Length: 227
Ligand SMILES: *Cc1c(COP(=O)(O)O)cnc(C)c1O
Image 1 (cartoon, rainbow, N blue to C red):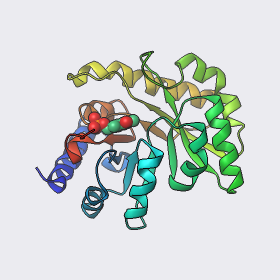
Image 2 (cartoon, protein in one colour):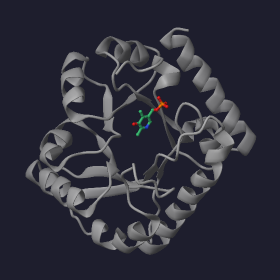
Image 3 (tube, rainbow, N blue to C red):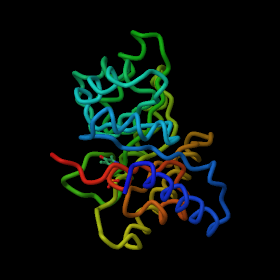
């Protein structure tokens, strides 16, 4: 299927998932994850109505962003190395993958140097997988107030990548855990966190049922990635 048809299908599935749980489709932002796909694919998706794109590597994104027309919104969804913070702050409207205090501090410095306030999500390793980045739920709750003190970062919410499974239902408890964790963070901060970034190609409908406000979809839009 074409990129255009894929997007139309996903938008229908977003609407259906929202209908099942009494939510509005406008509450869910579709982030098209374009890593490993060329700038031409981004342009086609943008022409089909997608407004936000996700990339996982700064270097790849830097080239792609320079090739795409302006006006496209870019977010970082992959692990960020401290030495790329300066570029990242310049390229992305939001960093979804803040996974350590040292990274948060480096990003805060880079944002301060540019005199901007940088929206970020805190990444949570919901299933405690050794192969994944992100805060453990406990470390997140313990570090939250310190992170919130960084003057040039705006904490907008949480992001997680649960274990991959061909059965989306198996991801549900991880989504519930992240949604619950967001509530606990809101209690600690005494303020609402608007973003819950969860759900990918295989499981975004379940994620929406559990309260996701941002789904990150790659394969179902662009096809398989060639590495
Ligand atoms: C690659 C990636 C996605 C998209 O995954 P698909 O299964 O292709 O939809 C979403 N989130 C993150 C963090 C990713 O790295």
